[in-house]
Image (cartoon, rainbow, N blue to C red; front, side):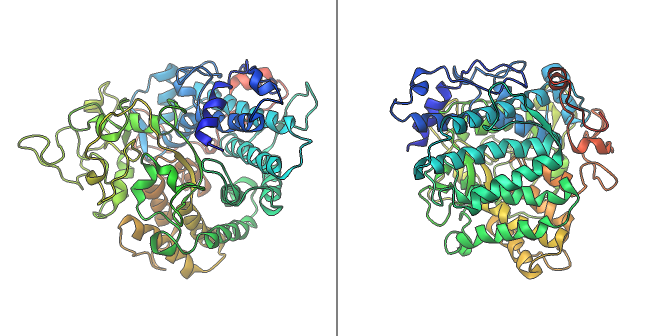
Length: 565
């Protein structure tokens, strides 16, 4: 199956007459080729809808959306997920706080309310995706041939991904599966109920051999499913209060790591080059890709500048971090879109201090608008490790707001003679409006660091091995392997996770899980708690989860709000 072809078909079939109503989850496709069960590739087409529901925003191209109330581009699934997991942390800031009736600034400052339009949009976007997966599973509930069972397992993993995000972000969730009777209303599951369901669902998929161990490129397989299960376990104590899940998470991590030994960086299964994971054609590092032994992207979403166009995904990340000036030329990044609306906060830059050879920040522009890459402006020089510029406030002009341009994703092909940084991105022709760069969801590097966290937080497994895994990640990036038993702490591990996964939508989850986001042991960062406070201040513990949107409560009067809202 050609995933690019079917993602395109799925994108065309997304116009289901879906409206923003919590009870309206029994979606029916209006494409006659999908309704006709005798049509060629009927199953593949409908499965593709489950993937494209994460990748694209609507039926009629990147400017359309089947979720109302937001700018269509801003309503894309992965873009909304990025918005609520990155803007609210110590990594980056959206420099246009008045967007969407000030909802953007409320996320920047962690002062959101239940009327925040981004939160409402994401809640409905995830419910819509769950509905697509439910429809697929309902269509083929009686088919038991091997190929269909594998496809149904994929749809179940994709649905579980949306329920995972519901569990993480909102705690409570509207819940319904394909087993519901026609017209049946969704229930509101508690965090414990949804956690239990996710564990049971993913364990069944992983342990009962219901999913392909060698998936087709662009589709999820055993590694992606087990990685998502490990993520559920990783947060088990934070979500349920029970410490039993650390050992279970670590075992799942060990299973995945064992399956990837022998290739890639130092035989670890990691890609040899970190920055290749975020370039055009990074799909070769996905499961089913061409880089045997380096298939680090265990779970990812495919994008293509012709077939899968979206203002979310990597196109959004590239356009948001690249500034349209002579010192950040958009064509050099393989994507002609340019918005210049995300800047790095001081606290992210500080994590790279002293790590001059670490490649993970090699594409950044540091030090502000008055320094340039060597040779690009007469009389100017560029210091690759100058982090002097910090976010200076909402000036109304990105040129004067400050902050580093924290570029990580590109639409460029990797350079076969890669030497890091500028050598990889120097020239390009025919940059397009959309990136053909897949978006990683869970990478093997995450699994290595999850193993280490289980050792620290759960006191399980081998500490020496855990330290070895952290140093492996550092060495691949070019940093010294200097984590020892004396420096193996949660604070240092979370700093390492930030260096490794910034802009990958995991930072908020990491901070919340370790008590660093809100509550008595929280850390502070620029803008936190107050839009005018560049030092940051403390926020209420209720902010560890988001409020159920007002529109949801209005549509479902029997649903209840999260505590503190």
